Amino acid sequence: MQFQTSSFFLLPSSLVLISLTIICIHLFSSSPAHSKQNNTAESGVANSQCYQKYPASIYPEAKAYCDGLAETKKTEPEEIWRNLTAIVEHNKKLIWEDGNINSRVLVLIWTSWNGYEENLGKYMSLERDVWVTAVPDLKEFCTQYSNTKNTNNKVTLPYRINQLLGLTPEKPEKNQRRKLVEIWVEPKYLFRPTPDPEITDREAELDFSRSNLFVSVSNKYKYWFFHQWMTNNYPWTRLGYTYDWGKDSHWETIDPNRPINVGLSEFIIRKGSSIKIHSVSKPENYCRSDLNAMGIGD
Image 1 (cartoon, rainbow, N blue to C red):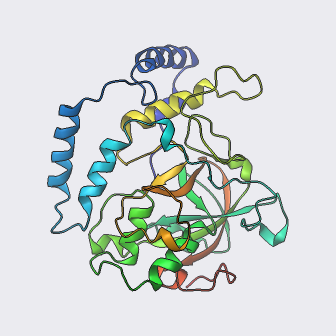
Image 2 (tube, helix red, strand yellow; image 1 turned 45 degrees about the horizontal axis):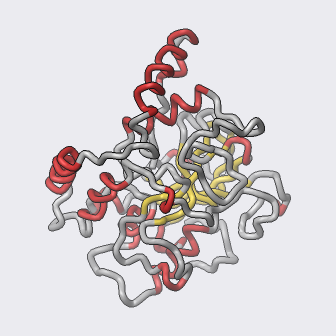
């Protein structure tokens, strides 16, 4: 899931505070965590429009995507997943540059942009915020998926990755252009798109912290968060994980206790961050390679 950075950051500080105050007052009683009423009629209209935009005859299992758009408008305590990937030195699954813990960590982008491939092995500065997952989370899933004998023939591996990451249904000509890009990034440039954006714990909260003196969230971040909530056109959970709308989940071989629709832990690299492109791979190659042989581009 990728997006344009808000123009909010160009506004004068006084206007920022006024805008933020208005938004917070409006959303205090209607935010996903506090809303007590579900506008069924409005959701029904939105779903109907989505079904028309993504007919099942063209987009396999697209109804689940449309349902996810409505479902993620609200967040509930039981939807909190307490096994998120934490970016910490004692997380043995993470891959650090040159094996140096707390240097740069390896993360993954699913994209059709060719600019990463053009900069393979080089450093570059991001021109927008970019949504990523930690390596090897997606690799663990897709290696199992690509080897299963029970897949829906209409759901190709690239399409299944879109489902896993909570992206829109795509036609083959667009979906097949996507590649998996591994990049090195310093953890300080990462945050979770949740009310508590820290990346070192294993669960996200429903609301911004009001009582913890040691954990604070800036007004700038709150504005960004609310702006995303109002304008984001994806099934965004806001709980630190992607919304997996695929029926053929195959999580039973990886994590049998995983709740339905819980995808991968997601993070955002901030606009302007310095990154290094490590590898660029087609999903068919990335997902069949050995988990211990990371970083082989093709």
